[in-house]
Length: 288
Image 1 (cartoon, rainbow, N blue to C red):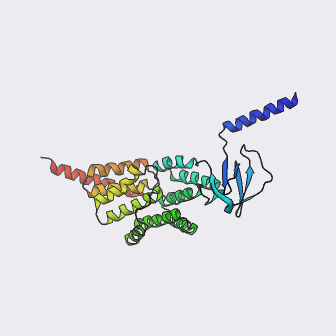
Image 2 (cartoon, one colour):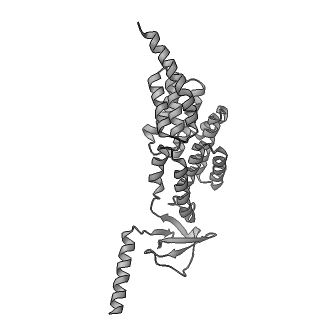
Image 3 (spheres, rainbow, N blue to C red):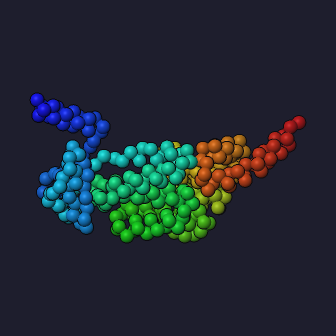
């Protein structure tokens, strides 16, 4: 009787584990074999299963060298869904914490094909730059370049271009963007490059071109929200340059409302009263 109760208890426990969304990651080896587990340990270039597919502990097992692995199949981290919304509402610190937690989990798979670590690493750099932590973002750009992965190298290049443009070094930004070209369709690269180009157009008072660059983010890259405050401020300045005071002021007000805590807020707050004053003067001059 007691054995039956124990077996029933174990069965119920397994059902509960599965019901909570327990999932397994899978290593696909170059010889066609697969190895699944709930979690893995990495020592140097060797991966071992530390918990089986159902979460059962694994005390011993043969390790697999990274060179033997063709790819890893794993669930997309929840951070990719939650972070864009957090960034769009100005909650950069919470977003950064979520990404760093996801990075810690993904780090075991590193640069293996199928790993989400590279994209999380880039997202972390974007958030740091959006928070005004340029020095930390530069360090991550250097780390991206050292991986020699083509996508990450280009991500680093676009990131450096944006950093230069935001500092007013448009010569360096233009050189980096010219070398980067426009062939990449990777959203993170396009987002950073678009904002950098927009800042360059603003500097040269090419307001229509600037507006098109800044609007690429909300129109074509809705999930790339790390730079949304930069893009919104840039769009507002482009509208003002085009003498569209209503849209310029609305863009500033929307930025102040939705992106609290971003470096662009102080600029927006300083511009808003003056732009409203100018609009009032223009409207008064038009009155009969």
